[in-house]
Every structure is written in structure tokens, then in C-alpha cells.
Image (cartoon, rainbow, N blue to C red; front, side, top):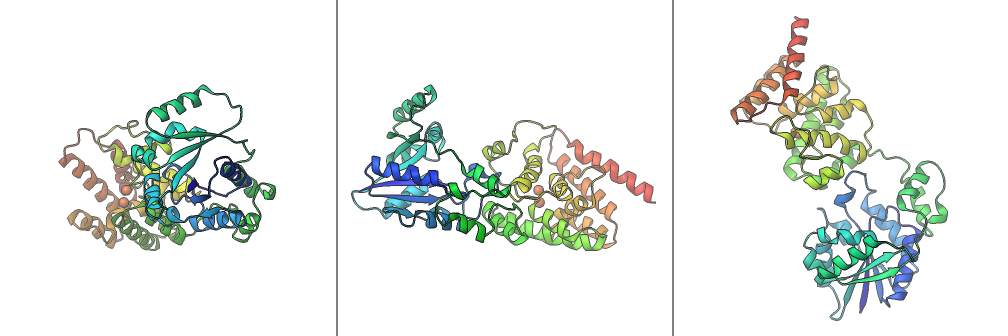
Length: 393
Ligand SMILES: [Fe+2]
Ligand SMILES: [Fe+2]
């Protein structure tokens, strides 16, 4: 039995996907092709991916009526990041004895398969079908092909005419109010309309929470929920916009657990831009603001500033930033005298003094743990706060 595996984000699935699958099924004499929409692909971290349930539903609608086309939800159902290795292992578990798996990939992916998690095992678990435009002449492909084969990957070549539209273009068309029906399989356009996909990138607070659960460890998620609650409480106390503060609070650490590679995908190099030791720690705030914008569709500058500056604050920082800056310290999960000192100032209604206390304890903490360079941004923030306190006296 010969099974093709067609993985992808399918956001949305379009006619090009189906045409390729039909051609490949015939050319390689596959008994079936399993479409596997990805769950949360790490390489698409910066763009909000449509919820898997919608992408899955669209693929189901699209392939119904095609003989031998099946859909699997194994990647969508996984809570954590999914690696091809995991998917293949699972497929093998339920496979027929004589079943052979062929993973269908774009020719450009060929160069990347060595970087896949446990690539050597992946090479044993499946063959590859690399799709390429007919006549596309490129040396890169030839060298990638040779490299892949030398590394032990079994690769077949499929010359498939390139369909002249991509999912990205389709999303843009819909967003701009142009119909994309001619590029979409029957039923998919209706599904998109009915569920209002691609029109707006905004997510509700609840959707963001749900998404963050997949991106953060339970401990970090709990901290984020606490900071959101505390930011909202402080907002009420000090007259800031409650919803903005809650949103910035829940998202402030959204990038905290990204890998170095994911940082690069966001355009941030971990090795650059550091004038002090805890550079990685600082970068999660900058990365968080990018992620909030790109993945969660946040476009409010006050919210983005609050995320970007939540660790160090900054001179002239806005009220939303101030709320999150403090809430990160005073949320109910923080235990210790330094946190209590900030809480005490808040209880007295002294916001500036609470922030001063926070800057001091951050600086002292870093000095005590022996960093060779002090973060100058925290010092600048402190200078601004002391000036504010003096002026308000
Ligand atoms: Fe943080
Ligand atoms: Fe935090």
C-alpha cells in the first residue's frame, strides 16, 4: 500500500493544492493521500494562523468527493509544536503491514529537511516526493537533491505545474474585499464567508488566552493571567484603560519561551543589540511586541509599548506601560519582600514610588548576581521617575 502525505498550513486550502495532489496520486500510483493540516507550525510563529479547527474543516470540505483523499487531524490535535517525526511515528503505528509513506514537499523544502527534528529517523520513516515546476532549471535544486540523497533521504521528483496563486495571496484578496472564489475548491469559499475568516486579524481576549496556552508553559501562562488581572486592577485604581491593560498584561511574556531560531524568524538576532548581560531576558519584551502585532493582530500603540517596555520601563512611558510594569511585580504569584515593598507603595496609592522601588530592586538584584554590565534602560527609567516624584512634591 502506497500512501502520500500532504502536510501544510492550508490557510486556506486552494485549488492548486488539490490539482497537485490529483496529479501526484496518479503519477505515483498512490492508494491514498492523507492531508494533514499543521497545528501550530513553529516557522509561522509570527503570523497568526487561522484556528486549526477552521483549516481542518476547509480541507475536509475541499477533498470530499475525491477518491482516496483523506484528512487527518493528528497535528491539529496536538497541543505542542508538531514535528514531522512525531506525525510519521504516529502514522506508522496505525499503518498497514506493507504500507509505504511518501511525504509530499515543495522542491524548496528539500534544502531544509536536514534541519528537521530527528531528520535521520524521518528519512527512514518515509520517502519524499519533491514537487517542482516543469522545466524549472536550477542548480540549487540539483545540489539540494544530491545532498538529500547523500544524507540518506529517498527522494522522487514530481514535475507539477505551479498554480498561480498562493494562500497568502488569497487571504489578501479576501481582506481587500475581492472574491477569491475562482481559486478555492467548492464549499471552501462558503465556509470562509460563513465564519468570517481573513477579514480581520483581531482575536478576542478569550481566543488569545486559548492560543497562549499552546505557546507558554503552564507556569508562565498562569503568571500571564495573573499579570492581566493585576494590570486591570491597577488600571481601575489609577484611571488607565482597563481593557488595554488587561490585554497588554496577558501578552507581556508571550515571547518568553521562544527558541533562538524563532527569534530569528521574528527578525531578532539573539546575539546582537546587547549592552548588558541579561540580553536574552530583555529580548523577550521586544519579541513579544512583534508577536502581539503579527500573531494577535494588536495594533494599539499603548498596548504594544507596554509589552515592549515591560521589563525596563522607559522615560515618559505611558500609563498602560506603567500598569503592566508594576503588575509584573505585584501579581499574586510573586512571593518575597521585594515584591511586598512595591505592593506597599501601591496600597498607599503611590504609583511613582512603587515604580521607583521596582527599578531599585531590579538594579540591586542584577548587581548582586554579579552582572558585569547594568541595563542602562532601567537606570534611565529610574532617573525619569525620580524627576517625576520631585516635580510632584
Ligand atoms: Fe517578562
Ligand atoms: Fe512577566
